[in-house]
Image (cartoon, rainbow, N blue to C red; front, side, top):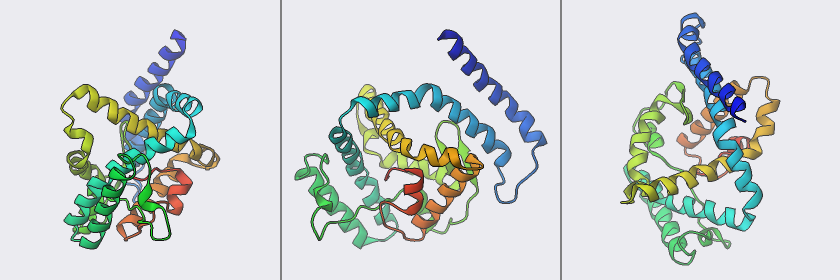
Length: 245
């Protein structure tokens, strides 16, 4: 076991060391201007995920009852209504802000702190939307942005990376006073996301170029959202298994 982890660590270190060499010899790609940086970081992220994250996600999926997993997902989606409302207001979308606020109130009360998505039930259910500060920046005019893969965080763009600052201050766990509890809530949030991505792995493995598959899916998804797509499950999200955010 120790030899296995030592080998993986050496591969990760080697990948990082090769970044400088790769950046120097890789041909520029006008479609993906940071590709020379992105591909090694993508491989690095995969190595870390394979060793430290994916095994935990598989155990969680195997031992945790499905109803509990659904309630955990619902809880975090309900917390996500707070940044949804904030971004709606920043975009001047008052009607959407009202419906997203209604979802939060209904699910936080009748839905038992968001464990049940009662707001979506019935013929007149309120559909959940996905908003973040990156979309708000696009709404303000920053529409075109280069694709970049962030270490450990994964696919993004320069605009969406800047948007992470706004996302941080809109995220409810940020304001938990105890750092220990903040870390636990955030860790479970990302574990829930990782579990939802397990179903996308067969499609990724079948792709001719996995990096290009993930890049194109991410960019199509972002364009859909920036263009006003409100569906919780877009075709791209279904393909990638991307959780609502």
